[in-house]
Image (cartoon, rainbow, N blue to C red):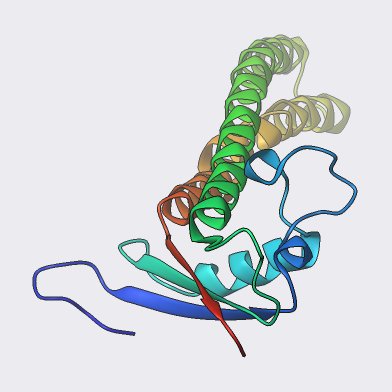
Length: 183
């Protein structure tokens, strides 16, 4: 790790591969700039990058044993890796939007349900004061509030990991990529 003056820390990763194609998903028929990274390469890069603060910048050096005959692959690798993580950021952002939409719908349903349960509990409480009435009233109150569990979980906890993942992918989209020949 090096830290330039007045800048975010730069973290470096060295990947060693036999050839360029090893980095990309062999089952993906699209050209390199649009290809998915190989799942193992993707997991390795994500796991490595996750360990650093959100203010970090990344520099990925790819050591190629077999240098392509077409020349320096740095530009092609940069485009492929950046496009891959930009796509993952976009997909995760869509998942976040869907989760928050589900949370809003769940919250509306939960509020209506808890209101109905509390009204029913008040009604039952007005009917009498025996043990059966108390159990029914308390049960409705508990059931109503339990119905709010999932919406509250979404808005308090579930969206944070997706947001963190989006920020990670965005940082990887801007990582400096360099290809070098040799081990």
